[in-house]
Image (tube, rainbow, N blue to C red; front, side):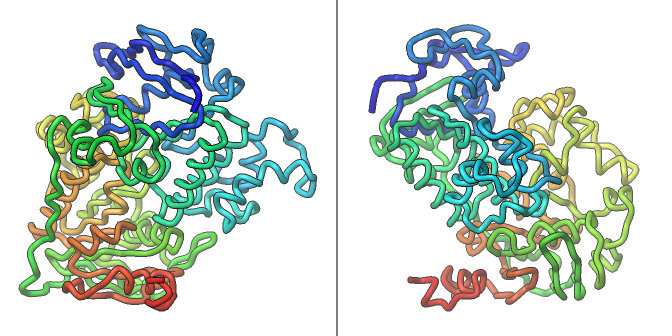
Length: 498
C-alpha cells in the first residue's frame, strides 16, 4: 500500500441547520479497501459525495494527491479518475444493457454499431461481474440485483483509480455479493483506492483492509480490519450495544384464512407467473424465498394491485383486490413495502407529512396528528414533517415508507425486502413492527433473500422458482438451508451442500 491518495481535513457539510458531516478527518490509500460503516443517516454517503463533487465542503478541506481538490462536480470527478456507484441507479430502463454501457463509455462514440470491435471493452467488466446478463436485454427487464451489476460495470469502465461503492450489496443475492467481494478485492490488489460505504458487517469481513466508523456525522473510529471484535464495531456504530432480538410471531392456534391467491397468472417482459395459489391466515407470516429474478417483483406488484393479472384472483377479507384503479389500490387495507421505495413508494418533492398521508387520504382520512409519533417511532432522521422526502438518505426513506405502511393496523401486509439498506437497529425495529402486525391479526407475506431471518421468524416458507411456487414448507424446526436452497435452484440437496 502507498501513501494517502485522498485526505479529508476537518471536512464539514451543513444543510441549513443540519450538520450532515462534522469535522471529518480521514485518509484513503491506493491499494486498499476502506469500509465506511455507520447507521442510516450517519453521514457516510454525504462524506463521499463531497469527494465526488456533489456536495462541496462547508468547512475544511479535501486533498487529492496532496493538493486541494479542484473537483467541482461529478464530471470533474470522473475526469480525475474518481468513480462512484450510487445506491440508486442512473440508467435508462427502456434501453438495452449494451446501450446503457455505451452511453457511459468514455472511449467509444455513441453511434458505434453493435458488431464494432470497440464495444468489447465496454462489455468486458460486465462479462466478468455477471456473465449471465444478456447485453441485448432491456434494463427494465432485469432484476434489481442485475441492475446493480450493470451500474457497477458503468463506473468501472471509466478507468477510475478511486472507486466509491455506496451500499453495493444491498440488492444482491449471496452469490452475487460473494462475486462482488472478490472483484472489489482484485481492484485494490491492482492498486486502486476502493471505498466501501456499507452497514453490512459481512461486506467488511469479506474484503476490507481498514474500517472507518461514522456516527451522527462524525468519524468516531478508524482501525485495521480484524483489530477490533465485531461487537465493538457495532457498539461504535450505534453508540450502544445492539443485540439481535428477532423472534417469530406466536404460533397460530386456529387458522382463519384471510389472504388468498387463487391460481394467479401474470405476464411481464422476461417473466411469467403460473398458477400461483397461496392461503395466508390471520396472524400468519408467510415467507417467500427465491433466487433473484424468479418472479418476486412481479408477484409483489400483482398482489399489490399494480400489475394486471391474466387470470386468477387475489382476495383479502373476502374482497378482490386484483383489479382496481389507483385510488382503490391506495385505499386497500394491504400495507405494501415495495422493493424500491424511492422509485415506487414516495414522492420526493413532497413533505414527509404528505407522504405519510398518501394512503390515508385515499381512504378518506389523515394522519396529521400522528405524524410526529410515526416519524419518531420508526426513527426517521430527521423527524421533521415539513422536510422534503427527497432530502432523506435511502435508509431513512425506507423507514418513512415502513412508518406509513406499518404504522397503522392492516388486514394484510406485503413486505418486499423490507430491511434493504437498513442498519442493525433499524432492521430490528422494522421486524418488530412487521411481526406486530401479524400479532394483531394481519396476514403477512414477507419476500426476502435472507434465509436465516426467514427460517427464524416465518411460520411457513414458500419457494418461488421460474415464476412458480414449487413448494410451501412448514417452518417447524426441521427445515434446513440446504433443503430450501435445493428447491430455490432446482438442484439436489447434496449438490447444494457441496
